[in-house]
Amino acid sequence: MDTWGTGSFENDAAAAFIHEVVEDGVAALAEAFEVALDPDAAELEAEEGARVVAAAEIVQAHLTGDTENVTNAGLRAWMDELQPDELADLRPLALEALDRVVGPGSELPDAWEESLDASEWIENVQRLRASLGGGIVGG
Image (tube, helix red, strand yellow):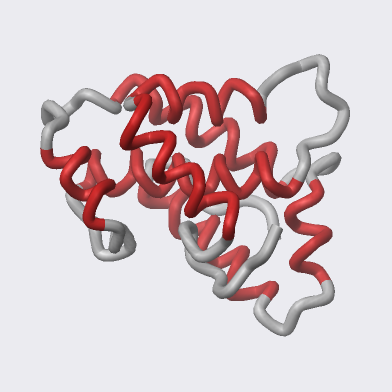
């Protein structure tokens, strides 16, 4: 997975995920969370973790109206078509999946561990959790 920044959409997995969301809609968001929360999966791969962070960013942006980090025009257009609370049911899944991303058995924190930007990445995840109403964990 190539990464070019610490933001939710600044990696190849998230960039590809945006296209899935625009094409498949809310189902793509739910699937990203469900894959991360699969109780039979011992490990959460880095790519799946990156998809969760991107999905949580989309849910957070839609529910709070803070779309500053959503720079993809196609994704913005898709979000503009949503009803105001259409993604509200995904909030608890997003929080739980973010916990999995920063928890044990997740490859993504390990991938960031050696980076000088590791603290900036975890701050982004913490910002998402706090904005979704989940407080600060992991880190």
